[in-house]
Figure 1 (cartoon, helix red, strand yellow):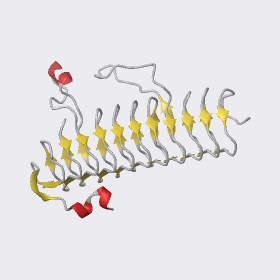
Figure 2 (figure 1 turned 180 degrees about the horizontal axis):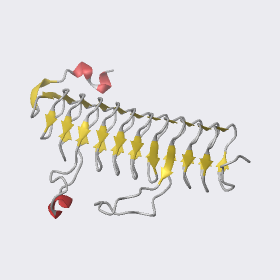
Figure 3 (figure 1 turned 90 degrees about the vertical axis):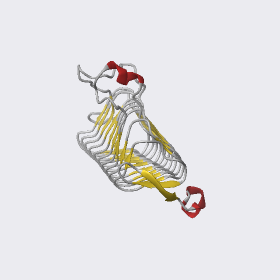
Figure 4 (figure 1 turned 180 degrees about the vertical axis):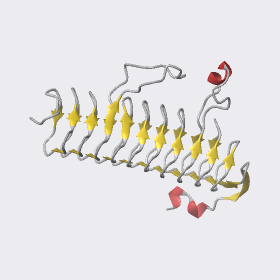
Length: 248
């Protein structure tokens, strides 16, 4: 297909639609009926499935550029970004190389998804959400606006994360070499719900079907199917079984 800004080596499926000033680089694969908005940039090798829509000014498949003082090591061998069929990427979103996004997902406006993340099917990553590197998000999970999902974190299926939740992975806050042995994001298990403006400290586990109330500070593991609230969070009561994912 001949179109300004599309590299000759890109593979473009039938029915694709392009806005103005689109840049599609070498080796990109676009499935059938992909729609790229104005000024979208798709970096080399990115694979975009059938029916994916991408909003204006989104950047897909870029490689990370790290500061000289960063504790991460730069990698030039990241696999291409993959976005599954039927997904949508919002305006101004940035999704890095090395990440895989499943089918029917929404990566909303101005969201950022870093490298080496795995996102399942039918996941919602809300407006302005940041998902840091090497994080896994299970299918049917919903992460609402402005949440911060830290690096090295696991979120299982059917999890709900409310707006402005903050997760952390470093108890040393960048001081001493000891931190490298302990850095780890939270693990949120299947069906758990995390309320608005709550904070999860490094390495805590939120149990299956647990409920973290708004504004809670979670400093230790939360058992399965209990409600916790407060600063620090403490167990208040059990979660009723009729609220479980499998009962819906």
